[in-house]
Length: 429
Ligand SMILES: Cc1cc2nc3c(=O)[nH]c(=O)nc-3n(C[C@H](O)[C@H](O)[C@H](O)COP(=O)(O)O)c2cc1C
Ligand code: SF4
Image 1 (cartoon, protein in one colour):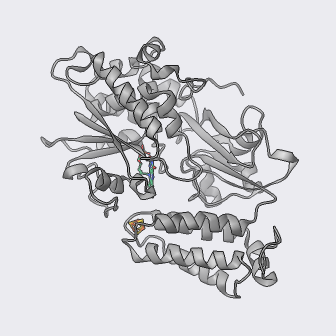
Image 2: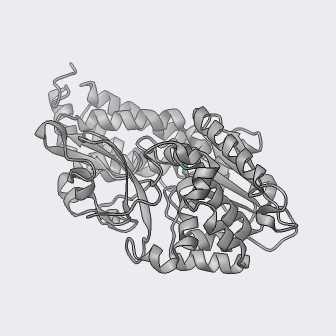
């Protein structure tokens, strides 16, 4: 199926870092249209488009903007460019290849919520992306698109600052991000209050993902009907998909939401199938916290916010990780759990202790030292971690265990315990 790329239209090079190139291709036209509308109208338009957040949870963007209270206090927009979820690498590419569309979406969002100061919180390791953004901001300021009197409108201002993060996964969680931006440790906070009511410096704050804001201008340049012509009723619009692992053509691909996962992995337009003609053993639909899918589930799953739920999984960031038949599921899970154990901020006991316990248990099973009963203990600990903590990192660590790997590949875990070795790759005692 031929599909017109919009979000990734500049991915062939770096020319669009330059403002003249961006302007010549219509960037900032959407902002011009939105700034001619009332903020309430802008919010209604985004609500009508059905745009859902691309940071992982799929929360409706217009509804979130609508939660901002009318107040005299400053209102902030925080652009979440922390992107630390393994398997996810779309936002950094959008920043490096198309920084002006991100600034354009930021201008529209800021207008909608009545904000004059926005921060782009970018993962510390993305030094190049931060430099690209700084330069794009300078260019936009010099042309009157940012700063005082933007777009020639007196009294209307917007300052955008780039803030480099400290390199912790938890700083991507919106309240952790706010703590980190304020200069504290990136500790998440209990919600409510939600950031829209009380966020940065205790003022109303909207946190949006990079890709979400890159979608926004298209709603205004092409219109709501065009936006809704892609994807499904509940998940409309374009999406940047990541593909990594055992696939012939790993990379970033754009398609409508709702694309069949099978098409993404196997079609020549996208992944081109599994290398060496080997069989696919499993695929993670969207960053490692999303429960893994079996080949039979891959056949039926569509990449929207609803379909993966049928298989006890979620779309997440739509960064797909493919695993072929040579992969040991115990080893793959251990790898994921090492990450979450390392990244737990330690505030909540079920997460601090739980991530350590489940990692240890899986490491023991993979090393051929698993005991009978370990699998049941593993499942019990994982399930006990859910819904009891300040943020969902604990759930994100537990889901791959009890909704994914152990649930769907249990015989492989049992073989490891019985044989006292890795039965896929022959390692262990
Ligand atoms: C542990 C954790 C890490 C997260 N990391 C990111 C991230 O790196 N980037 C991101 O956009 N959202 C991340 N999120 C989701 C944010 O909390 C928030 O929902 C999102 O930025 C909202 O933007 P959206 O509505 O535009 O999707 C993370 C959430 C959790 C629980
Ligand atoms: S769930 Fe984990 S990461 Fe989240 S606040 Fe609690 S300890 Fe920190």
